[in-house]
Image (cartoon, rainbow, N blue to C red; front, side):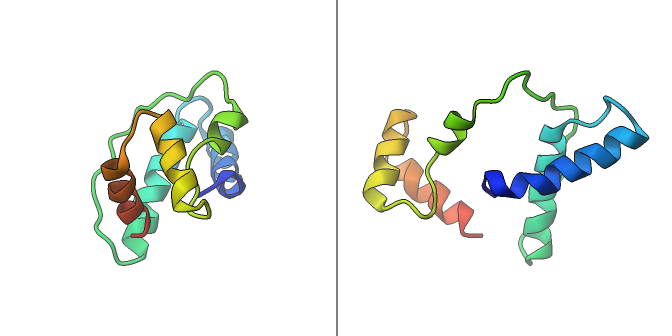
Length: 99
């Protein structure tokens, strides 16, 4: 899910805030949505503990510096290296993200 997919999370957050203000974080909504998406696509399901807190700031440049499935392998390697990750991490995460 890229930045464009967060409208769904924002909508869920707005609806939850109307019912129970300051109880459920966007981080929890995102974790639960990811779990449900994998489960609905026939993948495994797992328990998701709640209680995460949202960050106080958000920097979109940080999100755009993350590897994208549309990046070439070379660009992905560069982005992983900047984050302190290696080719093994790249392959592991690439496989997980294809689920």
